Image (cartoon, rainbow, N blue to C red; front, side, top):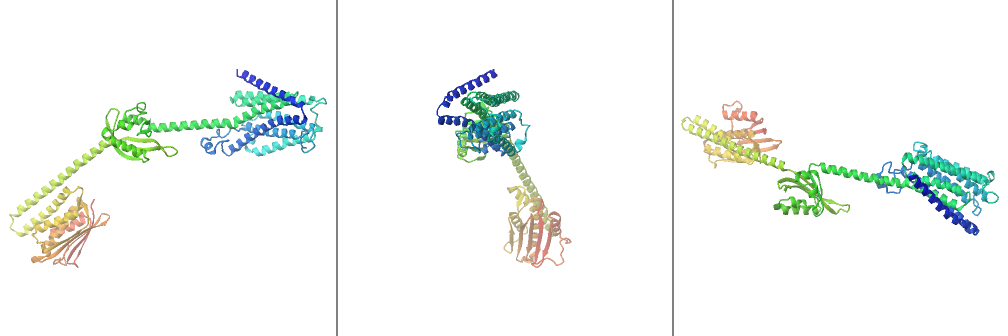
Length: 625
């Protein structure tokens, strides 16, 4: 059926063109000027089509060589560009384009050689013009037949060195044609004395027609092998060109028009091959990329663990991913076209919902929002929410993008941790409180026990032990009262410790003054207890021995941080001073020996005694972790 249709189409076109040409043939009997005008006009149309075919083919090839798309913006070509989408100028198309240029060039020589035209190289004559015309028919048949045997895997040198091959071909064929045209006497006449075609012309045209029809047959085979329907246009061109050669045996104008009709189909075939086909392929490639991008986007959209919801400026849902369905319960079909946040927000939070949406639509990204939303089943869930505006190419807000994360389990775990911390804090405070109470009980027992002792030596020993226990008890009391159960503020602690020692030793603050200079220093219990015991011993020693017989004086305490958890403690007085030969490590006083042990073994520090200022202890230590 398809073959019958094509045959009918060719016959219809051929008969129509022939009848139009036959009608124009009447102008041949008019005036010489009118006859020449129509002669040139009918021959120029095929010439224009011939050079147009060459221009299209080689322009597309040139752009392909530069990785550009034919007659399309380079940016678009680059986006959709593949080897297939940037031009279909294969070897055969490139060969045909070159063939049409050579044929058109020889036909141009033929037109320029008419007797009524200015002389072309040598004096013009009808014989000279006919020789060029005959050479053009031979070259046409030869090159068209050769094109049927050119494939992508043959004659590849044409693709690699097109300018060189084209130059050699044009120069060769042009030289042959010029030699024949300049020397017409060397060739037989194509017109008999009575004005009809000579036997040589008949033989020439029948041979070229058969060659063109055979070329059409070869292209028919290629169409069946490749399925390339665009080659049908070339097939029409070969058949109509063959018809034009046969018509030339009898009539001029119908032959010219039939040739132009054949060239028109050549033009359409080459145009489709070089431009339409790449453009369609480019569009298909672009649509394929768009489809693939949409599929990738949809896969990412649906595979996200967080709910992703897109809405228009009126907060109507336009996209709803799988995680949104899992988290909130609504399917995409149920929610599309509805307002999500008003449906989901607790009515108590409705004003907050509207304000959040207004802030996002105004152009700002709303992040870090933790709120309560309702599921489809009415269950409340905690979510973390981020809203961002969606913009078009003009930066106009066209909707909202919302990312929602179910943080219900996280909030529950956080509440459990907070409750656990509160329980531990209560427990630690209770422990410190009980330790302090127990130490106070021990201190009270020591005080009661000392009431039964008559020897002052032992009474002082009990009092020293009681003060030491009070020192440690005070640490636990401060930790119990502190907001931070792991550290204690030494400024308040030292002041309260010293006041307790003044009361314990019944010291008149008017005679012995305290100069306490403590930076904002806090320590953990592992460093605070030995530090407190050291201060207790040194202050107790000053109160007992530095100011005999009610002598007035001053006791100084300084504590500061020197960086990197290092501290400097200075305790001194302006009393009577220490004996010159006194050594803390070897003294008989248990309290002073304990100071040395605490400094070296507990705080891992160093100490020196400065006697230039009566008595001053300089202790350097690092906080114990």
